[in-house]
Length: 243
Image (cartoon, rainbow, N blue to C red):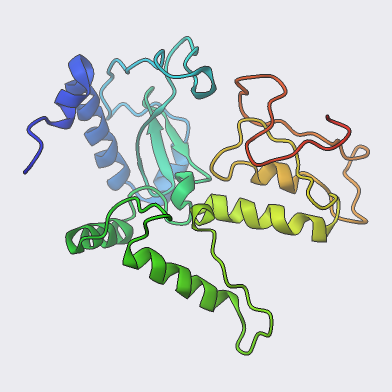
């Protein structure tokens, strides 16, 4: 059974213009090579028709719900590039943070997802009621994490952390005390840190014997637009000096 409503219908009165702009954006991105797109970064792309975006007033402040002025939200993306709702071209250094190594709508990844869906694999599988591919993934990751003959092998996988930049950020947080600069159990304070965006915070601390140019390292680094001043990102701790 197929949905009767098109995307334009679902998006409401502005839907048809939005979908037209999305399709024009994809045609533009698909029709230019990487060097051409790099040359046009920041440009207003006239090939994409103007439209009136949907406002964010129904979203919380942490997601820009109180934003005023023109919307600069995501319109459409392909690979490492995307256009915002003001029709300007950007290079996205995280490439859609959940799949940052793939970029937006990578053809091989999309084809694999479509094939898996036809085979019965669901899109989002919770770890407490795992489907067979998820359980097999856990076993494969355990096997890859251990050298042959390991006497004290890693035997558990936290699948909730295996989402691209989240996994990278988590690994960096775990190893940071070993690299120096932080005590065990202490991380850099990073506001509005979600989906691996705390990576820059962890990298901000200098390694042992490498002083930060301009003076000693500060103990805080704020990123993003916090919804509440002083809020610490979920899963992170305040240092004793910050409590």
